Every structure is written in C-alpha cells, then in structure tokens.
Image (cartoon, rainbow, N blue to C red; front, side):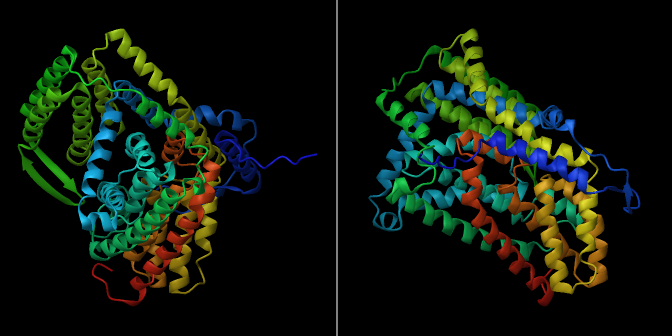
Amino acid sequence: MEKKKFKIPHTFVIIFGLIIVSALVTFIVPGGEYNKETLEFSYTQSQPQSWQILTAFYKGFTRQAGIIVFILVIGAAFWVVNSCKAIDAGIYSFLSFTRGLERHRFLRYIGVNNVVIVLIMLMFSMFGAIFGMSEETIAFTIIIIPLAVSMGYDSITGLAMVYVAAHVGFAGAILNPFTIGIAQDIAGLPIFSGIEYRFFCWVVLNLITISLVLWYANRVKKSPQKSPLYNEDSYWREKIELQKGETIDYHTPAGAWVSYVVALVVLVLFSVFHWHTSIKIGSSVFDIPFLIPVVTLLFAFAGYRGLKKSVHFFVLYLLFFTIIFLVIGVMGYGWYIGEISALFLALGILSGVAAGYGANEIVGKLTEGAKDILSAALVVGLAAGIIVILEDGKVVDTLLYRMSSAMADTGKSASLGVMYMIQTLINIVIPSASAKAAITMPIMAPFSDLIGVSRQATVLAFQFGDGFTNMITPTSGILIAVLTIARVPYGKWFKLILPFIILLIVVGFLLLLPTLFLELNGF
C-alpha cells in the first residue's frame, strides 16, 4: 500500500491548533498580572480556557475589525482596477521599459531586474524604518506579486520585495515612532536619540536581506521549478498567461473624463483647506507649504496625459496618486487604517466610473473583490484568537515575569542577550509594538540600570526583538493577510523563512554587543 505523502496543513488548521495549545498553557501556567501604576507583579486566580476556544474567533474578529475591513476594501478596490485591465497595461509597459534599459551595457551587466528589486526593497525598507509601514504592505502585495511573477520570479520574491523589506526596515528602525518613539519615551531617553548607530544597523540588515533575496531570485529565475512555491504560483502564472492572451482595447470612454473632473475637484477643495502640510519624520517636523496644491497640479497634468493615451493609464495614475496621498496622509496628517481604507475605496469607485461601469456594476465588482479576499480577512480574525485565549487566561504577564526573572544573576552580555530573547519570544504572543513597549519597557529600563547596561541598548534590544519575528508569527494579522493574498501557505512560508529569521536574530545580537564595549553617540 502506497504511503500518503505528508501534506502541510491548511493555515486555518495550523492557527486553530495553536489556539488549542494556548488554551492548554492556561491550565499549566498560573495566572498573574502587573499593577498598571506600580508595575509590581502578583499572582492571581488562573482562568483556564476550555470551551472559550470556540469564542476566540469571534473575539479575535472584533479585535482585528479595523484590519479586516481594510483587507476587504483593498480587495474590492483592486478588483475594480484589475477588471479594467489597468494593472495588466502597467505591467506590460514596465516590462517593455526594463527590456529597453538592457541596451545599456552597464545595466545589462549587473542586471536590470536586480536593480529593480534593490530599488523597490530599499523604498519599502525606508518606509518601515521611518514611519513604521506595516499594514500598508497588504495593499502593495496585490501589485508586486504579479509583477514579480511576470519578471520570471515567484511569489516569495514578490513578498520579499514588499513585506520582508518593510519589516526588516521596521526592525532596523531609524525613526519609527511606533517602536523607537514609544520605547525611548517610556525609558526616559531623548526621542530618536542614538540615530547614528541605528542607521548603521539598518544598513547592515538591508545589505544582508537584499543580498539573500537577489541570490534567491536569480536562482528561481534560472530554474523556476526550484521555487518551493512553483505549484502554488500556477495561480499567478495562469492568470498572467490568460491576460497575455487577451488583447487590451486601448480607449478612453466618457466616464474617464467624468472621473478625472470629480477627482480634480475634490483635490482642489482639499488643497484649499490643506494648503500647508507638516511632514513628520521621527521627531523632526518639516513644514511644506503648497505640498497638496503642487501634488494636485501634478495629478491634473498626469491624469490628462493618461486620458489622452487610454483609460488604462489614467487608472494607473489614479493608483499612483493614491499611493502618494497615502504617504502624505500617514506622515503629514496621522492617517491610519480608516483614512487609508477610504482612500482605496475612492480609488475603486473612480476606477469603475472611468471604465464606464454603471452604479450597479461598480457595486457588483466591489462585492466580487471583497468575496475573493474574504479568506484573508477570516484568517486574520482566527489568528487574533491566539492572543485572546492567552490574555483571557491571565498568563501573558506571568510568562513575562518569569522570563524577566531569568536575568537576575547574569552578566552584562548575557543579560542583554536574555532581554533580547525575551522581547523576541514575547513578540510571538504580542505582535503589537506599542503594546509590547508599554508592557516591557517600564520593567526592562530600570533593570538595565541595575546591571550596568545602557537604556539605549535596552531599547535597541526591544526594537530588534519586536521586528524580526513579525515575519513568522502566526499571531500577526498582517503576515497572515499578505500570505493569503499571495496564495502562499503558512507552513511553506514558515519552513522557508525560518533560517532567515534565525540569521537576523543572530545578527541582531551581534549588533547589540558593540553597545556594551564601544562609546557610541546616544548610548
């Protein structure tokens, strides 16, 4: 009798299994909590979780409601954009442009595609390092995955270009307000002090990451069957081949002009009320008068030019300026998921109008897109159930207390290493950077004074510990969302990314050691 080959369980199965394991932990680990004012730990009555595993999905769904709605809106908007063949036209145009660059001997020698990968990764890494890009990578995943496959790579390369790059930047943060800002404030340090060494760390982490991604990408390009996602990527390859077989009817319907006028009127009004913008990069604020009016003028010119070519290029310009306003909104006006969702919903509606769809057809397209991405939204809610079980079981603070107690009798290097590992392990349970900073830094900062480790080094340990495991923990709704969108099974992702995460953790510890033995500015 032929043995059945082992099949990696579905993501839903893996996460539900982790919920059960978390529930078992609540029977073994005693309950405990920190006093919010004195930060003293005390054991409390344990709250073992049993049948509550069946309510964890509901509680997780309500907890992650913002990200779930964001995912549904993103899926809906891009379904409309894809339905009018704008992304296809953009990919064909981009690939044609890159082939043209191969005429230059130097670019041909180093590889045009290599340059494209490096530039895209550096851009997203900077976004992660400067303003903490994380949730926003969900929107870009839908664009970059088909682009990467069209270039001859696989979905892992696409995820590396966007998701991995942004989160390596997040881990090696230079000015990230969600990690560095909160942690340094709690530790009583000048906000964003020690930036020089953090910039060095960011460079080192990116050199390692980009080098490995280029090696992997070129290996896949030479032999596509070597990709561990070769079978799964058939979805993208078939989609791209199907689109290649379709001819794009380049035209500009009347609705495109209506969409252009509506968008321009809205932007003009926005310019009137927001003619002055203050861009926040870390603790620095840059006042930029007429930023919105200038961008509006650029849209007026680019949109008109796109309309003269075809509706496809006009929709691409809509997408491009949506991303521009996303960056301005996040850095200048503190936009978060709600505002970004509204921005992409507007993109979907305006794209539908531009394509000549009627109101009912636009609603139908939006609904189809939401249905297509529904599984990603559902798995985010399920993953949040892991944290719900551990918190309701009153074991999170107990685990933190016991791990911090392990540092009592160790030397400087070992203590810093233990702090780093504690932050790394806690991140698997509490992926929220701000929440983890609020819980751990009031304990770690005073303790670092007792053992002779600088508070700045403690913050750096928190920063690395918070960032690296974000790319592997199943409790991260963002990770689960991008994997589901990319059609990448969590089991395969875990197996592939684990050696890279271990490498980053080791490099992170090596980067922590100079803070103990060298005089570094801010440390």
